[in-house]
Image 1: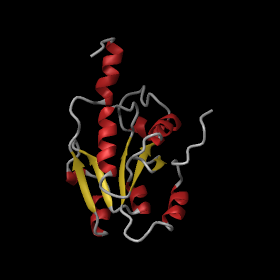
Image 2 (image 1 turned 120 degrees about the vertical axis):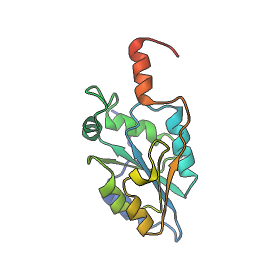
Image 3 (image 1 turned 135 degrees about the vertical axis):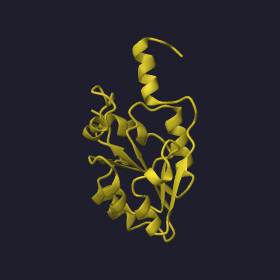
Image 4 (image 1 turned 180 degrees about the vertical axis):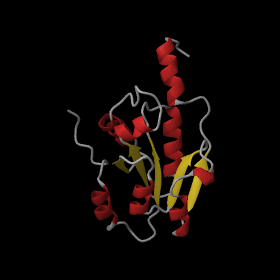
Length: 163
């Protein structure tokens, strides 16, 4: 059994906590599967956190990951394990697991001031962009750290190569 994860919250718990945020607090939001954590993930999350006062990670549930078509054997790590590892990162302040195909409902509920995705997402494809921009917030597609991909890592493991 894993120790309690104080960063992992329900939407309701987060909204209650949000009431105590000081005036001008800039919540940054990003989302993803984060199946096998690698340097590209940590780089993106660190740069996302630097855009505000706190970073919320919307973590795809196991069922949500399966529906994304990443393969029948994904996710490799269960959502509780992924959340536990991500919570150890200093740059992440809040984690909410969502079960929908996109984080739209979660973004609408938490109303972040900054929305971030990796550079493989063009601004016009970022889910929730309209909500954040209508509230006067910012949306960013940050460049990815080259050479890192969960799918590529899994393929290297499968082929037995150490590259």
